[in-house]
Image (cartoon, rainbow, N blue to C red; front, side, top):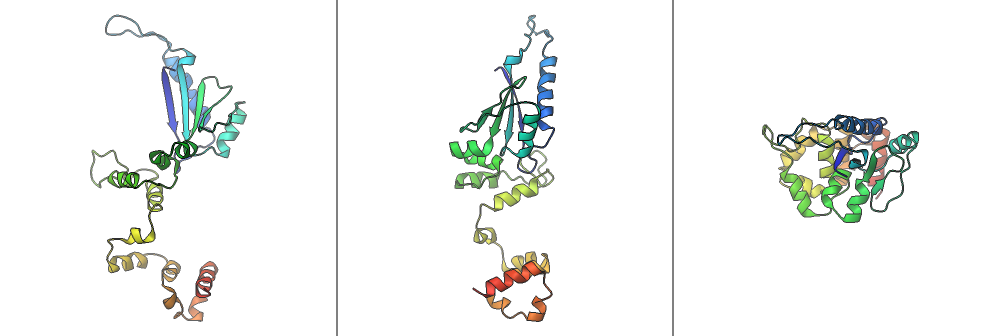
Length: 222
């Protein structure tokens, strides 16, 4: 392998039908563009790139049904690989599918867990993420910022690594109250402690959605 072309599919933008067709087409275009021998500054000419010198890499959080279907439609075989690196059989260009979830767990790599959408285990990785979430208004930053596609999903996944107590750490009571006040009424009710839920009238509880009523009954029955 001389050149590798990598496509990464994220948790918020997973593999979809057509993605593998496009990746193989990119590989063909790359090969086509490198069949002409260009002039180098030293007077020599560049070498043509052979098919066996190019490898396509498809990194996915996990191997989903859409990928399986597209491989089957192309007549390609995806061998089982405990390592998470699947060398596809029958592809016109060398193709490796990287199952990031499998690789992250096998190699116990917390940074890879970020790309696979898995819960983090290392406090150092959590600290690194906090430092790289971006600064509002910093036009030179390469960090994740709210204007990027998938930012909200990224933040939700980051928060899932923390306990409720850790999420609320540093917030004043009025800030918590303001945040709850902005949520739908049903969510505000569920945020109440059990002793205050018991003070709500049956008539009022009957106005809430059925699933909320069921959660309230379950909590009060404990």
